[in-house]
Amino acid sequence: QLQLVESGGGLVQPGGSLRLSCAASEFTLDYYTIGWFRQAPGKEREGGSCISSNTNYADSVKGRFTISRDNAKNMVYLQMNSLRPEDTAIYYCAVDPEYRFSLCKLDAYEYHYWGQGTQVTVSS
Image 1 (spheres, rainbow, N blue to C red):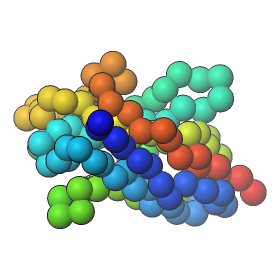
Image 2: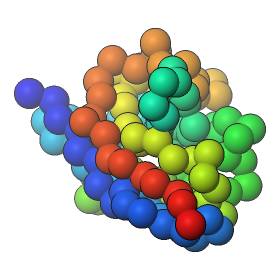
Image 3: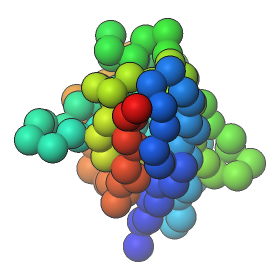
């Protein structure tokens, strides 16, 4: 059974930082595209970043969020800086089974495997 487990969410003040982690089992992340998505109440799931042979970021998070991987630990991270209240959402990591040599995609339909999510709340 392929599993993705997110962690690192929590409550943070505007302007603060959090680092989210995505741990994988039953497969090796090295060979797949990984994306971070978020979903706020009443809104559709939104792609924020992805990593494969390259990285890609939504305009809403460019310059603030950084996706990275640690192949030795089979983990992917999302460093979130300068957080804003509008970043409040459940954050999910997801796997696109296709390793992409072109720019990785931020479209949810490209991703077939999803974690359970971790809540990020940005509030004063």
